[in-house]
Length: 124
Image (cartoon, rainbow, N blue to C red; front, side, top):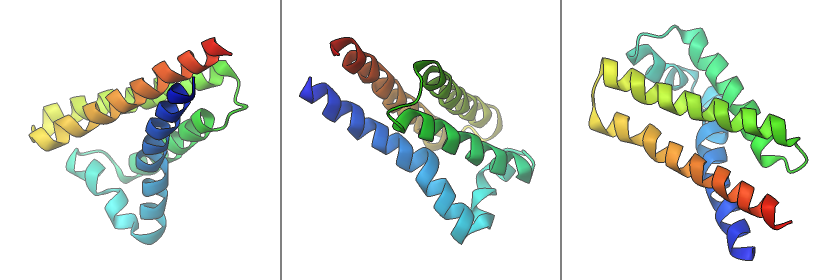
C-alpha cells in the first residue's frame, strides 16, 4: 500500500505542477507566454485564461484529499479531455511530433494517477 501511495503522489504532483502551478506562474510573470500556445492553434486569448482556471480547479479537486469522489471523477475527466483535445488540435494545425507527444505523455501520467487513486481507495 505504501508503494501505491508513493506512485500516486509522485504522478499527481507532476500533473499538479504541469497543469496548474506552471500556468499560474506564467500568467503572473509573463502573460504573453500564456497565450502563445493557443494563438498558434488559432484560439482566442480568452480561451487560454479559461483553460488555466479550469485546469487549476481540476488539480485542486484531485490533490485535495477531502474532495468528494464524484467531483474527483469529473476533475480527472476534464483534465483528460483537455489533453486529448490538445493532441487533436496539434494534429490538425501544426503536426509537430513534439507537440503531439507531450499531451499524450501527460495523459498517461494522469491515467496513472487515476489508477493508483482507485488502488489506494480499494485498500482502505
